Amino acid sequence: MPDSLRNRALSEVIRRQLLLAALLFLTAGSLRYWEGWVYWALVSLCVLFNALYFLQHDPALVRRRIKVGPAAERKKSQKVIQAVAGALVCAVIVLAGFDERFRWSSVPTAMVWLSDVAVIAGMLIVFFTLKENSYAAGTVRVEQDQPVVATGPYEWVRHPMYSGSILAFLATPLALGSGWALVPAILLCAAIVIRLIDEERYLSGRLHGYKEYRREVPHRLVPYVW
Image (cartoon, rainbow, N blue to C red):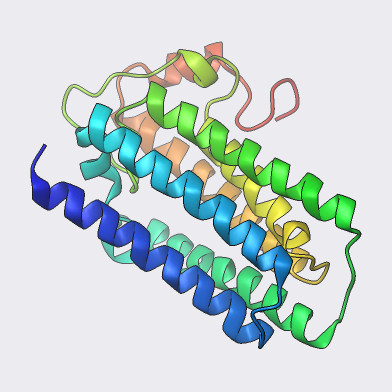
């Protein structure tokens, strides 16, 4: 594995986690935000573990996922969706920080810890999805000779990575002790649903065997529900 890929991937992890910390604690106006510290530590450890694991075991996946965001997307619709989703992610964190500063809402301590567990569970689903599918790029695209993956979590739903992401995003506001941050979190989940529906249209027309896979696995996000 080239050192340049390792350095770039780890630098991106550090940059994003520092940005997360800045958004959390600057808006909270205090470092005495224990919910923020617990959440930040858990997310940072999970993200760092993922980066180190896949750098060691699947550097090709890291290359595919290192470019993310609106600028990296090829389709105009996905550029818009990604821009909106990115803004909503920031809104969740910023609103949670301001909620801590001004005490707009209160979340029981037990619910905070339970939500932290849900965040970890969501990130574990994402990890196992990436472990199963090396072609899970950070953008919507199809590579030459790319196969349809129908094993592991893909046996249950067609978009397990989005399932894990939605679980983590919905749990994030409560893990941060904020009720108000649920509003942008719900809108973020709606943006993810719009993204996956647009992505399915793209894959159905370009990925060989995907239409058959859709018939075999009828549910998108939640087994036996939708």
